[in-house]
Structures are given as structure tokens and as C-alpha cells.
Length: 242
Image 1 (cartoon, rainbow, N blue to C red):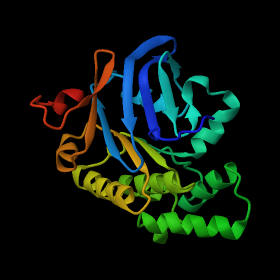
Image 2: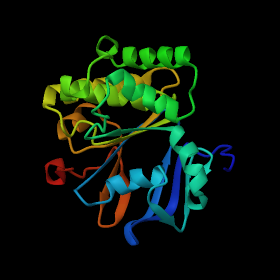
Image 3: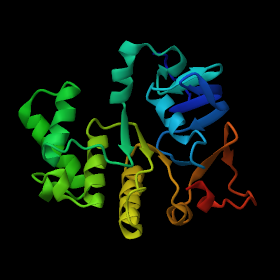
Image 4: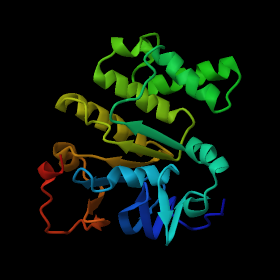
């Protein structure tokens, strides 16, 4: 690891990102500070998810610089990846809950896998994050007994377990109806804006959410991903990105 000093918590400069040996994003420059909320948008196949994967050490970065906190992604060793991922919370479109155990046990599994041992401390932490997402009363439920929105709330609780500085949300509302998507978005905004709230990077196709909750935005297209200026006159037709 390398000390960040004044470097932003997420920092890419002229970085090329590859997936299975193929260039996906060229010359990425992205600087995101602590506590920011940022969208990454673009058509299917434009490299949005590959950028997220690069941030968790799962996509190759060549050239330039790339840092998550104190982790130099270009020089990341395999043994460092678990430590990097403990600093991050990741939320997926398809929830990725373990279907053979309750909401509580899904979260307990993650804590034990990341080194938590004391049963009381584990129990307290699980109830804290479930309460934060409004799901403490359904801790005993199996995933199939929960709605899509409830499953995503459990997935968000899972992402919060280790008090991450960064949450990476890859299409977190993609499988939800409009009203539920707004509920999840409101929840994520509350998490982001609370005291010492995490930085959130969100990949989305949902135009109504994008317009209702404006934030810094990076647009992926033609092997590039660049920030869209707030004062830009460019009309972003997000319907094309689905």
C-alpha cells in the first residue's frame, strides 16, 4: 500500500482497463473525494461494470495510475485483494444472497469470513446494519420470503457490515419496480449523506432516478469514460443505455 496523503479516495489517471486481455476503457481519469456520490452511465457493453471490477482488483489495469485509498491497483498483489475488498461494500443488481440461509445468517457468514469471531459483537453489528436499512424485523426470513426490494435492503446491509469507506453499486435498482427503486435510492442517499457516510459509486440505467437525484456523472462510450460537466448542454438519452 502507498500513503494517500492528499490523494482522493478514488484516483485514476490515464489508466487503461482490460477485460480478458481486451481493452475496455482507455485513458480513464477519475478523481473522487470522500463522501461523494457519483454515477457511471453508458450503454450495455460500454465498460461501466469493468470499471467497478477494476476497483475490486478483478480487472487488469495497464498504464497510468489507479488507487483506491492506499491501495495501488496497478501493483496489487493477489494476497492484498481480500484486504482491499474489506474496505469496500459492493451491491449487485441480482442481490447475490445465499438462498439456503436467513437474512441474519447471510450477514453472519460475511462477518465470520472477514475475521469477526465474538458472537455478541457479530450479533450487535448485524442488528445495527439491519436497523439502518429498515429490515431488523425480518432478520429471520429466508431470501425467497422477501420481496425484491427487501432482498436489496439486505444486500445493502451486507455492504455496510465492515463500515466501508466506499460502496460500489452495480445497477442496484435494475431488478426493481419504479416505486421500490426510489425507496432504495432514498436509502442510499441517506447512507451517503449521514455523518462520515461512505463514497458511493453507482452504475445505473434508470433515467428517472438519475434526473431526480442529480450528482457527478461519468459517461462511458467508445472505449472512454469521461465526466459530464454540470453545465453541459448535451442531452443524455438514457433510454438508449438499456
